[in-house]
Image (cartoon, rainbow, N blue to C red; front, side, top):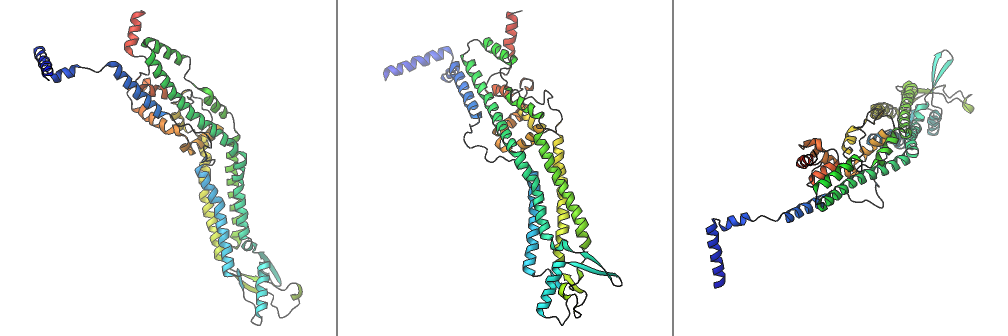
Length: 428
């Protein structure tokens, strides 16, 4: 203990003579540069490792949407609404019994009255006397054919859906699987490239060699992966998907126009006619004198018929602007999605002005990429990087995700100015 006290006293005397206190001496001791650099490189490696996307193998992309949200809504309404009305018409017929109620003579028995109802419903023809002794007939068959016409309408509206599912969905599915996989892989390759650059910078003793190799690699386009860009450029010259999509919406508009013609020509003629005159003097009853020539009947299902007609017109009129809007989306590019993915190397469709007329398969694929944005894991990362890129002070040095992640990893995205000046001094 005495030896330790002597050592402490001598150390204190030396500090007092040199004019430094123990706390000041501690401040004068700086950490070793090698340990600080190793910590910085380790933190950069962890940051880059966290930025890598998980590798999705096996059954993947099970929830891939092969219909746009508005197209799915149009399908459900255009097909489901007639089926709903058909069930309403059948339910009314089952609960209310006969859809007509006739008024036979009072001397008719119950069985004869039932026969009149059935016979008038089977014929469903209105007899109107226009001249003495001459009758004008008008068929009221739309009332009888109402549920079946609604079923035919639902089947017709489902035909464009079947066309899309069998003619376009298989090819679209393979395109989306490839493009989504390549976009995520291209992002991961960019991150791994920054990791490789960081390791080279650690091993390189001369910074001039590292920056010379980096600039040479950029000039020779080593950082670009042109497979995806060339594939998308080829899709601009393909028109199979867009033709099927246009045909699908054109069929929907055509069938909607057919609905208007059907309702206007057949339903409007019998829309307000609640009563009609029925003749049962046919066959064996044609010579019976006690049977009247005409019997008045009333359509008890007229209210259901009117509701179905008006609601059909209203619903399909509301669907027409939605279908037209779906068609107009093919006339413009989704440049927001393209601008975000331009941070990937060799994905400069916008900057190179490679986008021409938007009516092609590439525009359809971009619409479905937007609809399946949840499957694009790299989109959220690139979206954040785009926001940070817009707010950084060094916009001119950042073009791709490689440049930005290089900056976050502690490396300059371009050669530092002091190294550039020194190289100019060495090679005037």
